Structures are given as structure tokens and as C-alpha cells.
Length: 105
View 1 (cartoon, rainbow, N blue to C red):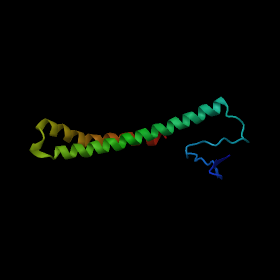
View 2 (tube, rainbow, N blue to C red; view 1 turned 45 degrees about the horizontal axis):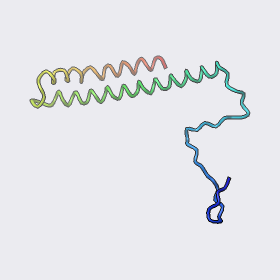
View 3 (cartoon, rainbow, N blue to C red; view 1 turned 60 degrees about the horizontal axis):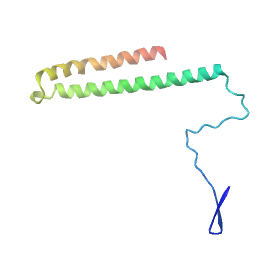
């Protein structure tokens, strides 16, 4: 399709996003079982991404807790003690999650 502007024809070009799916016309339609399997694989992949994000957040929280624990008198004593415990505990929890995910998939 072309557009005419001022006597000159310009092609009507449109960009298609990377996420756009191209349907294979030579392939038979997806069965319900195939669709369920595909959706389960997508859900599993998404769950793994979420778990990896949680691991990163736990490690970031552990680093912040270390900073607070070492912050001296600027932080209340109780907050420093809890931060010190978190700094020791959170990396272990993240490693446990990583091990569980490694076993499952």
C-alpha cells in the first residue's frame, strides 16, 4: 500500500516488534495438549526467573544489612544486632534456594 503526498508516492512501512509471533502456515494448529505443555514450560521458565530475582534481592539485602551492622553508633543497637543476624542468615537462605532449584530444574 502506498500513500500519496504532494504527487510523490511513499510506501506505507510499519515496524513489527520483536515480540510479535509469526505463525507458521505449514504447521498444523496447536492441540490443547501441546498448548498446555507449552504454557507449563513458559510458567516454569518464568518461575525460575522470579527465583533468580529473589536470590539477587536476598544478596542485596544481606549487603545492606552488613553495612548497617557495621555502621556504628549511627544506628540503634537493636537494629545493628538484627542487621548482623540478617547479614549472616540471608546468603545461606539464598544458597539453599539455589540448591533446591538446581535439583528441580
